[in-house]
Length: 224
Image (cartoon, rainbow, N blue to C red; front, side, top):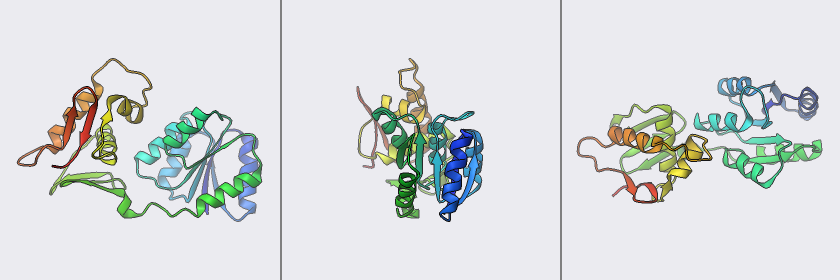
């Protein structure tokens, strides 16, 4: 496999990279989050091994950015942050597995091998549809009927999240945490403002509205 290792501790980086190469893998390395983001955006890796505490851009933000850009390669977090909440945060950010330091290389290798056996995200799984609204998660495009929608990055992410939860209520808190990374209420109408912008772009002509406001709860996207 072609693996990207994003690790800023040189001793750990050398240890992991050498071990993976000895077992037949091609390994590229990056020692900060921004460099990891750049490399993963340019190369189609089979697997990423990512530390959480990275300079420039932390591992959680790195993986969220790559998932938002449509990257489907499995991600193994390799980190000293080992509480249950740390693990949950890593997995919900887009990680597929979570290994806490200190670790044995035998366990790391076993987890890498297990992730390599998982089937990749098939193209059809990247296509979301609600009514005549279609969203392509790989190509980052959205269409309502035959009309291409001009969505800003946050608008695309928000619409994608709603469509992934089509038919279910999505609260403002969920959107603040998942789209903006806020784990508190910023005391602003940022969610409502973006929802309004999306509605103005997708609800045109004779097409029925798709995004419903659920009073006192949040929002739901659903076709009639």
